Image (cartoon, rainbow, N blue to C red):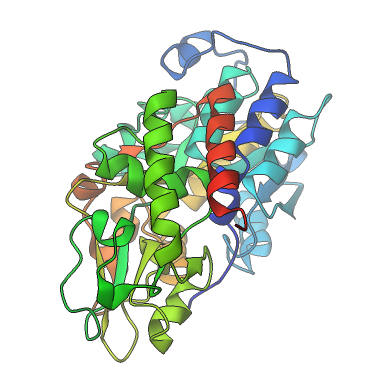
Length: 374
């Protein structure tokens, strides 16, 4: 199983303030909701459309699709052309997709709360399930995502959770609570790292306090900030990308981590992952089709191609993130210690992160104030 290092998760919450501004620039508030989207489908799509006359433009994170994807998908779908554009962050994707005029993008990969924001601005084509028979491969739990129940405007690609990644041979006590990071014991002083991305920086403190990860209440966010500021002198640092390496070297003993980036399959077998007792999140990366697309049948066909078990399993095997595709996961050989074995119902115990609109700026301020140099 190979491992690709990329910036897919790093910017997701970091871009929240930019997201709020970007979607606002597209026309302000909208009453569009996932529940009502399919009933108002704009286009009468043709299941037997001639795809040789259609081309597909995709925007996706680097490393999120196989190198040979363009060639193989184009050949199988028999589309006129297939081009892949890369975005480094959700913010980059939103800038493309919310710019005035036609972005030229047919299919976009964005995190769940960003799909929600795009839909609220009326920018997404409803998913037409009759054009994606491979939707049947998804776990039933993958249809119950709070930002899009029933997959009406998005199709999930990868999903996971956040927890404590730690050195089993160096900790004096197994961490089971977010407070083990927030109030580290003396033996872990300056041996703990936290993530800086806004929603994920706040997550441990909010959960430890018994609050929702999606709270927009000033008093609750203020309490979380107080906890994080008190924690700061006891941290090794803030780290979104190299915390696994710090664990391997012993520089860190416990870190806040996304499950797929916790190196539990390290040959030494001394790294483990724990979802704290107070609970955590459920993050999802999705595929959406733009309403402005002139190639909607081909766009649906591409998503259907990705959901084929032999194709979708690549993501779990190479990115090390679980995919919400039962048929695909059944093909994946789960290595000893791998977190790919986490069950869908366990993931659904996590709280889905949703778009907070303008309230996202509250988390921007919290992150800036907590991580600022003192």
